[in-house]
Length: 264
Image (cartoon, rainbow, N blue to C red):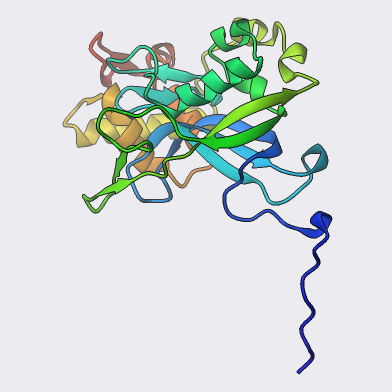
């Protein structure tokens, strides 16, 4: 057997492994999406971001991290994944969410309030920054990371650390996106015949059938997600299912309380 050679001690040869911490990264594939914590809990809305190390974002394999938004009964990603849409009693994300922790760090690192006011998250795509893992504010009598109810019915303590941005490097992505949001919203139209429309209609029809002739917006994040969780377009499909104009144009009726039925 050949004698094993010791590992190089040159810092350039070291690799990133496990959780990233105190490191420069580029943010990629930024979007709100439903995330089930790798099958350990029911799907919940979160902000997902690939953290890419290395020069110009060409480093180690991206590490995808999620920042929780709130309960699936209150929030759903928009069809393009760039916004988080309220569907329940909460009209704004809570300060106990990991999303609040992240955007607070972005504000403190220099992101203008006007950029955050837009409600869209696409300004983070391509952002070069320095990230650290920190303890979030204590949440009542829970540990720093809080608790998570697993599908087995047991409560698990979350990792207490949450990623925060401590420094932002130029160029700033939002400088090249001024006016893009307004233009996109102005050109938005209600579609009725695409593949996404067909997928969304199939989900609603099945939920209505299972509900004895009706379903509710509050049931869509969990029951609807379960029907299409293996579909690559799941977030876009779910986004359609919370647009009243889309449902009306595609043969459904929506009451003021969120009840959905087939149009007469």
